[in-house]
Length: 265
Image 1: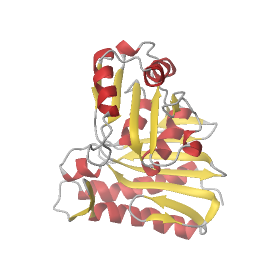
Image 2: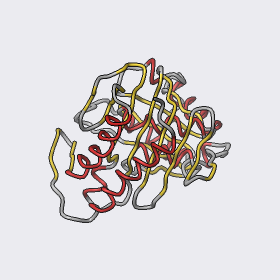
Image 3: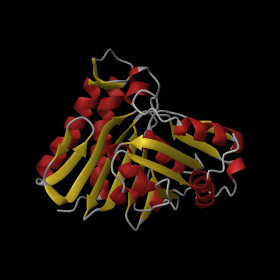
């Protein structure tokens, strides 16, 4: 049975309530790997989401940050990040979210990103549009890169030794109004869809971080592709993914930099 957008909003809000209640309290933190932390709140948030999917949509596949790949019907897949921005959460920085997406036949159908502290719910349905707390939202119409506020995620040099993102950062810092590195890819994409950011790029990001955001950006009228300009990058790239997104004019100019090496530094 196909889930509904209101269903995804409901479970994202339920998981978000767990996060909101835990924010600023003493919590247990575990280290999964190099610069990769998880908390008991991540796990409790994930449990809310998994319990619902297993009970209401048995047999669906699930790809989630904490539990990994839970196999099922390949034609129906959920992508879940129960707490994107865990490091922010641990440090008391109120910039994190729950991200839930649903795909059928390889096509993203539904996406929800919920920021529990701001009580903002960004949602989209394939072919029907995107909404912020129920109101239509639209990506930026800024025409020029030099007028754009950009966002990015900077990778760890130990995990990804290539300094390419640092070079992009240096270039775009000169060519845009400014850059924000806020530490939660899903929120960044939601903000881009709402016109709060004009462009965004990231390198080596996981599917659960971006699946909902990809659909929300598309349905808000933004452009999102691989760094080679491929709009089907989720199908054609091997994970982790690299992407560039923005209002259509800014996206095109950012792609020009990445594809043609227009870097004066």
